[in-house]
Amino acid sequence: MTIHHSYIGCDIAKAMIDVFDPLSRRFSRVANEAAALARFAAGLAPNSFVVLEATGHHDRALRQALAKAGIACVRINPMTVRRFAQARGHLAKTDRIDARILSEMGAMFCPDADTPPCPGRERLVALARRRDQLVAARAIELRHHDETTDITVLADIEAAIVGLSQRISALEVEIASHIETLDELAEQAERLTSAPGIGKVTAITLLAHMPELGTISPKAIASLAGLAPCNNDSGTRTGRRSIRGGRPRLRRALYMAALGAIRANQRFKAFYQAIAQRSGSKKCAIIAVARKLITILNAMIRDQKHFA
Image (cartoon, rainbow, N blue to C red; front, top):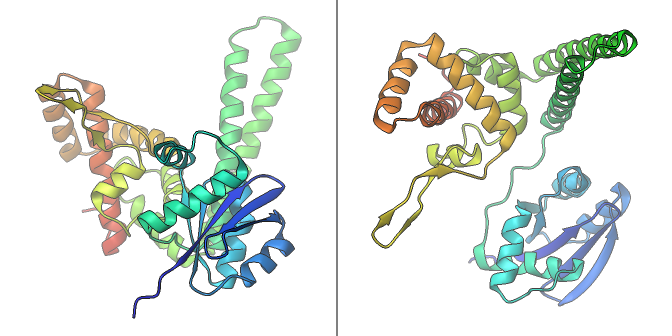
């Protein structure tokens, strides 16, 4: 017998979560804090399926509470939710409307549940994100260094750069130590770095921001990384293919990794040269290499093999 899910829509804000239950057709509000969310999750029926917007760190406590209660959930891109609402004729936008729209999306599309959050990987994400923030801050200070000649200002900027570099190094040590405590992530990091162009930082980025690696199809993994070409055709016109969407941090990391792979590996170099010659675009060829690289990495993690 098929058990039909009750798709609960949750619109998330910093302080509160608006909930729509399609069975009772009622709205409710839950404080976005651990104790209240634990009570909310415990009160849901076992076959409930929670649909929520991806809202960065504001949805973390809810996902953790649902995982502890054994309730399945899925995060939806906010842009997708808004377009679905507009297609349904809902031009107004309120928290209640969004909660109901999320419930309707779940019932209509029956999405697959997200993998429950892993505390070890969640900490890796936090550490990797903080490292990226410090690297970006250091890049700003380096630009400021080139824009001034005042001795006092230069000294202050140089001190800031040194301090940021030390903090980045300390975080990298902490990240490496954390990965070593998690056998699965440590093994995956070792496999990833066996591929040309994949250094420690790129491997950390992939492990932190792409938990789906090794579990989905090559097309899906390329789409998640924002490296899948999208058609742009109409009638007899064949438009130029282009990439869009995906996860920007992953795309940047894989683009730089592709440059390294082209320099380090003859197979990737030959592939790059063939695409560049055929398309007349070096950038297009680099993106093609990045897409090929992520599909290879996906297969390596799936098959538990090193690069060969």
